[in-house]
Length: 162
Image (cartoon, rainbow, N blue to C red; front, side, top):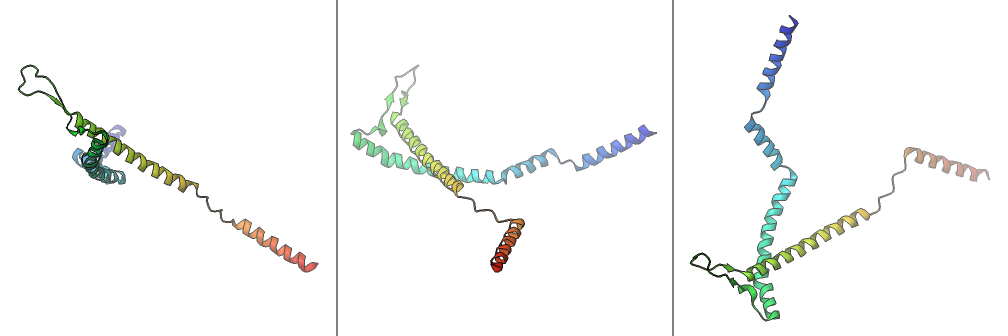
């Protein structure tokens, strides 16, 4: 009889857990919603958007300002530098290596790396300065206040006696 009772209890518990178990799709969307609404995820999305805009800005600076200035300083406009590869295996058009574009991308990389370095350095300096601020002295405890009051009363009493 006890085995039969245990079986019924187990079946009842199993039925309850089946009814309250979320579906796989529901659990997936719940997990996704939890992930997407975390502050870090939103911060990362904002960072990606700002990073994309910053990339456009750096590309424009390199293409329209840095490359022409370097061309003036060096005396060569390397934005149009290419290497034409020979015709291989009957291809109609030869392959072209755009060395100038690679140089522009390299300059862009170094500009972005330098700006990120400056940004991280500024943040680290801010955190370092923030952590060096001295902590305010702790408030005296109730015991210390009471002892100070007793000391002051004893001093006052001693002065009155002399």
